[in-house]
Length: 150
Length: 150
Image (cartoon, rainbow over all chains, first blue to last red; front, side, top):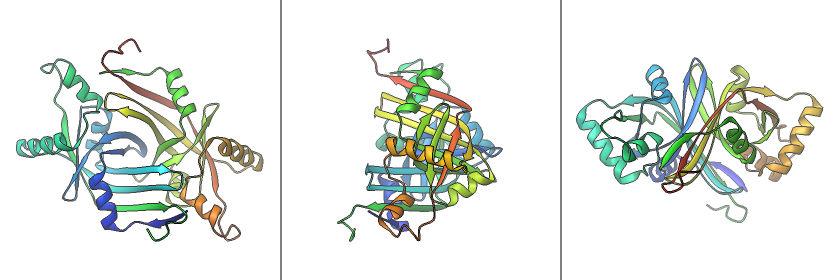
C-alpha cells in the first residue's frame, strides 16, 4: 500500500459524490463531532438540522471541520478533510433552494427529521438550513499494492 | 422510525465493539476531525498515530471528542459521542500493553503505519501511542418502524 495526497480536484470530486460526513465544531476549545448528511454545490456544503447542541455551538463559533471517508478495506481507502465556516440560511429563497438540493441528494437520516416526518409537523420546530464554506481541503488516498499507477 | 437515547451501558457496549471512529480535536477554537482505529478497555480508548497535526493539536489541547456510528440504512442506525481527554503514553510498559491490545483489535489502516509496514522502518519515526478517557458518553439509536420494542 502507498499513500498519496489527493489533488484539490480529486477532493472536490470526493465531496460531490459523498453524502455522509462527520462534522466537528468547537466551543471553548471543546470539540464536538456528529454525523451529518450533506450535498455539495459550487464551493459550499449544504445541510440542515433540528435545533440542538451542534447548531448552538456553530452559531457561537462558525469555525468547523468536515471529514468524509470511503474505506473499502485496510489498504483501499480515501479520506478528505474540509476546513470551513458555518453560514446559516435565513432568506426564504436560500432555504427553498437548499431544501430542493437536499431532497434530491440526501437520505432523510437525521434524527430531527424523523420527528418531522413521522410526528406532529405542526408542533415540531422548523429545521435550520445551513451551509459550510469550503475554505480549505486536503485528502489522502491509499493505493493497494499492485495498483501503484492509480 | 423512532429515535431513543441509548443507556450508558449500551454506549459502552457500542464502543467496545467499534474499531473505527472519528476523532475531533481543536486549536484556538478551530476543530479538526480525522478517522482513527481504536480499541476500548476499562474506560479508555487506545490508539496510536505517527506524528502530525492531530498529535500536535492534542498535546496543546487535550480536550477531544470521538464519534462512532453504525448505519445500516436511513432508519436503522446508531451514533455514540464520547467527550474525553488525550493522554499520551510514555511509560514503556504502557506502550507495550497498548500495542498488544491494538494488534489484536485494530486493522492497520492508519497512513503512518503504512509507511512503517512498507517503507524503511529504521528511518520512520516511532508512532505515538495514546489513550482517550471516556469522561462523558451519549448515544442515539434509530428504530425502524415495526420494531418499536427494541
